Image 1 (cartoon, one colour):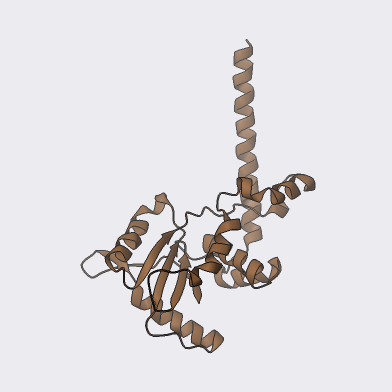
Image 2: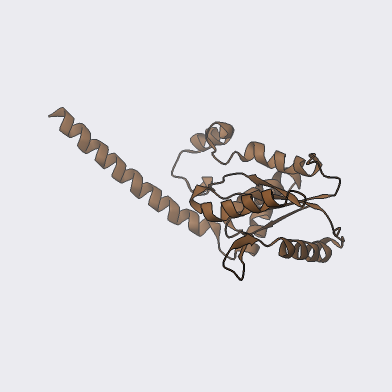
Length: 209
């Protein structure tokens, strides 16, 4: 089984940070029982797939250190994920260019979903030197955007969902519309591009004279 969620670090009474392992277990068991009627085993090997990057180094290091200190209960995996700023449908590009970008996705997509999502699907069967069942918990900081990107990709590739179905689930969890965020990001990208082109024109003009 696998679960999606948010950053699992907690602050201890003494001010130190650790991983909310017991909370992940109890919440995971409750969700699985409620949604699928399945009882999660009391003991299992937890694979923490962390989507954080170096800018979130404090939480990233906390998780890494915790699992190194508790090798018997789980393993830590870090897949740095940036997320997509905009929907391909709202890009100000010709349709043939967008189709070419989709075809060449492995050449430019920094989150490498084309290889990570199949790896996520294989992970429960991968050996981790453990005889107990394996459970995957993947997350970013808020458990919404980057986590939603990975989850939606999984839904479509392995659960035969459409993009509409996958986005419906993400909307239900996030409570905000990705399309509106995409439009705002598009405006920012176009503004930055315009400024970059203006700067380049100034440089060329100076070099010319």
